[in-house]
Length: 453
Image 1 (tube, rainbow, N blue to C red):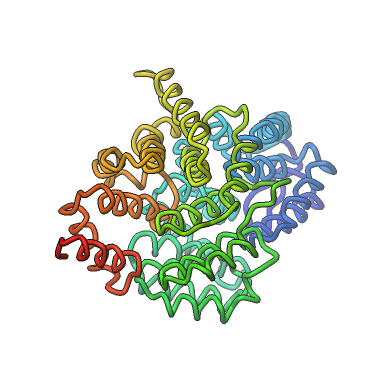
Image 2 (image 1 turned 90 degrees about the vertical axis):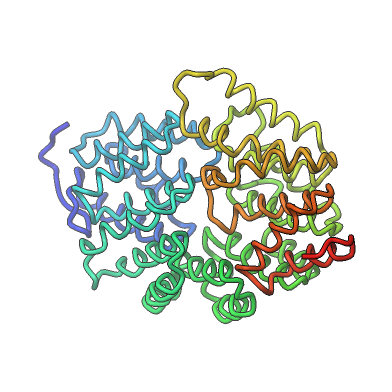
């Protein structure tokens, strides 16, 4: 829809709307790249005061979709409708198309639409940030790196956002295995913005993937004032800090971090944060650590998130199953498996959306495996996970997050007497992380069982 009220945002992208709305939009995008919690209230206020400002409606829809929470879909749909009704130009049309694809369950299509948008408007920082998250949600390591690389030369190096874009690049480099370069770029980003929690996250991933536990702890602890509170990524970075403690075998510290920083708010559970809670508790469960009522709290939170909702993001479903099984709620876990199975049967050989493909390739096998582990059907765990290891990335998330499935496979092989496979899996892990506590513990158990490693 054409209009004469056309201006530009702070990155010289065309925007349809009044100057005051555009300035407030720029402020909200700045908060977004900082993962500042005020981005939600600022965006809500923006769309309230300027309901006909299309980019404000687009930002609001993107934020609700980025939560990965099916309970946010209704609000995202309403913002999308307002976007469709607002005056807009071609850039707004492209955002509307990406949002429509995402709402339709085509996460990959939304990501591709933002790819195309960024060819024409490579300095659209909102499209960069949301596209980067979509690549993360779908486990697309290559585009996590290359989406940002394609836009780097279009971002004014002197602009305050240039450092945050470099922080995104660092995470893409890490997920693509370029650890030295990732750490270098993350360091540059952090030097520009100490509150760049995504760049801090990228550097943390490098230490995690290299098995540099002590370096990772030092890195996070020295900067805790920059990332440890007051941002939308606080829980996830504390989760990483707990993983380092876990790798040192310090279960007490892991539980302390969980209780202080990761444990969900029972009144307002957040799906993305719940995934971290469940993954941490499941790792402790694999180590046979008594977590008390913590798994019950996580299971209750997941039950409220999933209640009455159709399958939307199987990465979350699998983590809900981890919480249910750790809490001994096998019926709830089995119900998730049934709902996912029914969904795949419903679509059959017809058109499958992104989550259907992710569910079929790795998500449903992961859910069945976790349930089988809880029921001590260890051969079934191996049979579910071993053939799907090469498609775990279709499950979404990062390498560090998906390692929970690798650990489940190893532990099931050890407990189930699949010692030849267990030996090979332990050897594989130690080849990458020679001091990894998880693998060393399993090697010791195999030795005690009379199986040399």
